[in-house]
Image 1 (tube, rainbow, N blue to C red):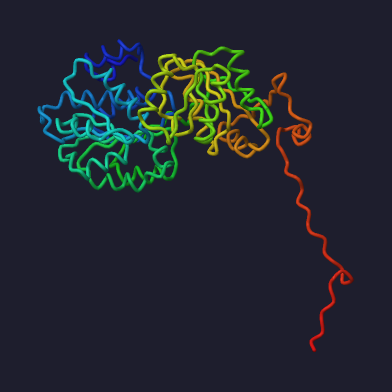
Image 2 (image 1 turned 180 degrees about the horizontal axis):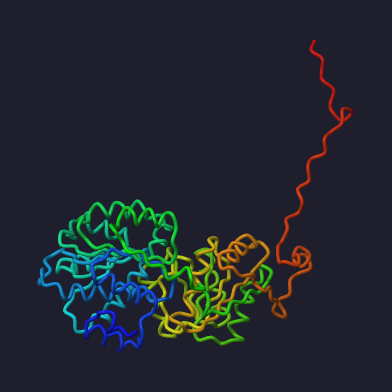
Length: 416
């Protein structure tokens, strides 16, 4: 099956071919024809399966062939794509720019962390496709910079991530701004009761597409788990980076402070690195991400805010210095490698205080990790004693307080 057989126009087929796409992925094969017919769609597909192209390509075609509004007026938006993070918004826009070659369509992205004035100027010209994060979208709407009267299509990209970040009420608020007659698309890496409820509220007579349930979420990724004392994780990371000499490594930490501290430690070992997390300005995050893509940075240290906003071709390795609190984030993290059928490597550094998140990850992916130890980083005797043969660390037994006998109890004082 080729892209031309999906009903896409010649210009789009040539554009995706120019990007090196030979055949559509499962989600593209299933979703594109339904979207082209005007159906509302809920699509569930895992990270790295080509979700972005599966909705941006048909949107570009439908808008380019729609002659009902040949000129977009000031503030008007014809298609709206809502994403949970700034990085993902920028990435979606970058993909659209590649796909829309030779199509006379105006596009823009709006998100927080940067000056709003350039975004106001872009909207003043009218936009065919607008990519936006929820908070900045509401801000611009309240400034009367956006007009949804001519809106035809809405996409919720990474809907599960938006719910995880607490955007459900914000999405419902945005829904009140939108015209009732529209085509609505919802794309998500996972499906839950909350996603189902949101879909029932926003979509009508939708087609449901699930290409995730029968896929092994990490089938193209070799996963390794190294047991190490928590205070030696940074030393082990430096050791792995120097031994393997990867050109690009994406490293995940739990906290923003931990990410910045790790960058400083890597700098002391002459390893060029930078961090990306919510406390950094958008300008700083963009510089770090551009440097990582260009290869001037060997290591990008990120928190989970970036797990679904980084798209690097042929990223060889992802390393979890800390296991995530939420098991699903593990799949999203390592999904930055092994994309589009390529092979990748994911390494997790595991210490005994992380047994609960590890058990949750193993249940989610249906796999029990082999606990490996790197020579020179063996566990201390205390850690070895607490590790049973299954790799589970048992807490010390809780001792009940001894009940005092009558002879131990102080005598009651008689009242005078």
